[in-house]
Image (cartoon, rainbow, N blue to C red; front, side, top):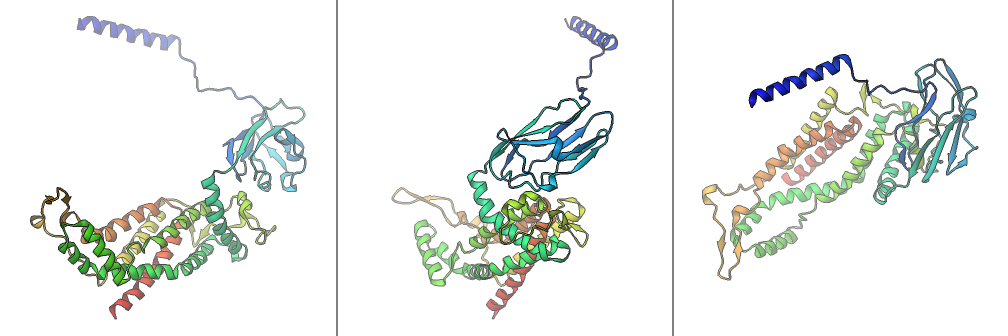
Length: 403
């Protein structure tokens, strides 16, 4: 049976080799491209206020001269548009195989509302080109809220600075905005650092409550609330500055990666608008660093510097802390049953302050360093300077508590 199977397999292999030798398969990947000028677009489904990136591709046997105002026609919901900005009227000369993007960059107002668009290319003496259709859709509720509440204010702050900063340096704009945001967060950040230090100092009292009422979780909760009230400590006091900074970081990420995109005109406030300022004048390099770069060797060094700064800030935050370690394994007790039939958790199931401290000292800086590696270096610059600012604040708070 096995020999018969091998014979069939060998016979089949001979047939396949013969067919491939005398009847080679056609190359299915070869697609004939018509010898004409074609319209090409990367993404045909856009969201307000994205400007479409449409290119002309010359696949003819010779060079082609295109007058955009005469040969390119744009329709909005089947209605032909005749009023186009002067910047759109250009004479493009395309050699064979060349692709050129059409100058739609100053037509952001046209794409600020959801419409269906058609782009046509017509020129005497060339083959007819199929029109290109695409749709501009409205923003979703969440995206619209984030864009107008967080993105637009931060971008206008960038825009107002970039217009006047010498060389239109993105780096100096990031530094100035970092200081402005840190000044706004100065008082909330100070309150958070003071609150964290108080939480460290009352750890012995918390441990005492946990030891005294270890079989009654409800009593522990009540006593802890009384302690927080007496010591004027808010266990959630560190959340506010973090919650404020998260949308700022997200906004900075999108702004830095698309700071030269002309569609940002859509978000510029009218009293800040400068018609003579062009987005391509913005310098994204800062002392040799490409602030839009993500990753790489320089990005790795930058991420390590941010992680080190975060570790130093965490180290300072635990200075003078009196952290009581968790009980040893042999001292832990199992869950026991009370007289009323309910079960209670002993102290061994309570959070270990020492473990939490180690997570803040080592795990958190490592996680931040890894995250910063995948962010543009402009965001990393904001993060690094902001962390140095917090280190100075932490040093001041430590001096207060030491006295």
